[in-house]
Image (cartoon, rainbow, N blue to C red):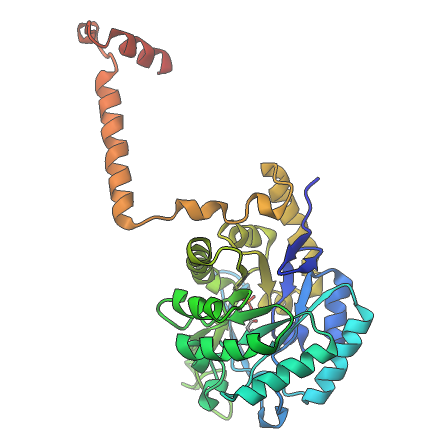
Length: 374
Ligand SMILES: Cc1cc2nc3c(=O)[nH]c(=O)nc-3n(C[C@H](O)[C@H](O)[C@H](O)COP(=O)(O)O)c2cc1C
């Protein structure tokens, strides 16, 4: 009987499915709901020391539907990090840890480019009992105007410096959450690992404009008739997240063995999750999927992943983690492999006896064998 239990950076998880930072982990009530339903761990909505600077707008979501059905396939948000006061958060983190002592609670944190602020937020969250940190270097809208979020994550040197401040004081595992809005995600990943981070999470949302309303001629989501570029998530981003997870997992395999990777972006089924794990993710995170289907999504996620493992005879996640990475190569190597395969097929076809006059004395045994193989 396969098991989904796994231990990542010392955190014991009943399954690899983690609530990603966002609305599904936005206060103590919803975090409790996630644990009660059976999620492997929770990463809270990103918190900062001064929520007074966080001003959200409405509407702040816009959704893309498939052309031939009502299914939501893409989701843009212009939501900021948590607007709830830090002291309230500290009380709720403490209360959540008191109630769910054996379940992993990870604090997603973001601060300005000031060492004292990062040190303070880490120390106060640790005192509240959190099990680990995810550094939000990746929110692509609003916060970059204050040089926070993806403004830091787009710059591997700054990311490494800030992650280094955190690593110097944190006694719990630290993951850096990376932005996909860069050409080569390997570089910020290396920055995080050089700073000593145990792991990285990828991806946060992709900068997007969801669409323009053809009646009002205004882009969406329209706030008093105006908008700003937002962050794209949900099913539509899965292939981009898979590609980035593959690239980071390759860096881990070749340069930083033992570091960990949490895959996120468009995961809604156990089969989606299996693909992230096959490409080297240790855990997977879900945000928009919970907003579409609710916390009960954890049950079909676990069932389908277990079924996949059973079908292949895998007992544990470690049995197939990263298995499919070996099948990536360069395009020129694909050309070489195809040329060789076709040449071998041609040689085989030539050797195959079509008419009796083709029998030759030299490779008589091979020719007989080829006829037996068909
Ligand atoms: C409405 C919304 C709010 C989000 N807020 C945060 C946040 O506060 N911190 C963060 O690190 N990521 C945030 N995210 C990003 C998600 O955690 C996740 O990285 C991204 O949405 C891709 O995963 P998904 O397709 O499962 O949603 C948010 C996403 C959405 C849709």
